[in-house]
Length: 293
Image (tube, rainbow, N blue to C red; front, side, top):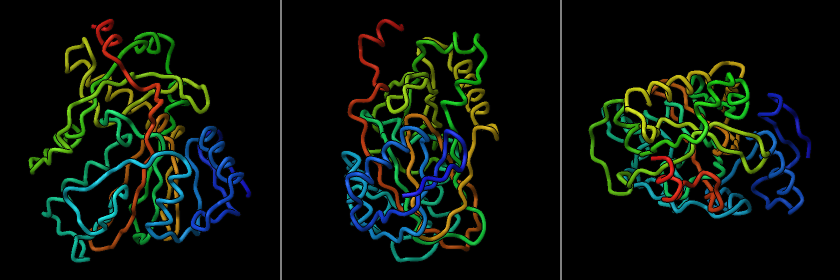
């Protein structure tokens, strides 16, 4: 294995490993260590099928049992269909509800921050890439926290935010049907935590975050907007240009990401698997909530 640094202390590219061929325990340990240190790991030339992508993800923990109420094209539990392709294999029309629903992925977000058990790692496999556009940007929330002024860090200490999946859709004006799995109860997350992989302090931000406990909603959202804008500055961001065969892994506990716009007449087929974070420091229990009220 060869590790090449693409952005210091944030993004690494690993070559010399075949994710679909069943990497050795030593190779998995090296990738795991790279994720702890850099948070984003890029592997190119990994032409995976669904079973191999899932098998690889299971080497890093329990796979989220995600199912899509809107898309039946794949039908593989744990595999999230992020393509612009409908169940008949055609590109979505601009007015198609799944397309409108997916536009929120172009907002800065953190996968599964809204679930009772959040996600640790996400692993995105590119099967077909657009000729232009469609990049994914990743923001380093550890470096972003380090760069905050001391008075801002003091303000954030102990704050918790409410995360709800549907909030990110409502922000864009989506008024379509909301299946029960997507209308789940909101959860609370600390806005600052110590990342377990690196023991560095990190922000925890997402477009799913709608309010801060104990704060007026307009004031809370303004702070969340300001923090997201701060973390999205170029010095904290890596932009990945996709090629078919790319396999990108990232740690949701200390990053946020967003997809960029691409031409609607070009096919894009990307598929994601996420693992759960059952021992997460991102859990906020009832006693902590009561103490914050």
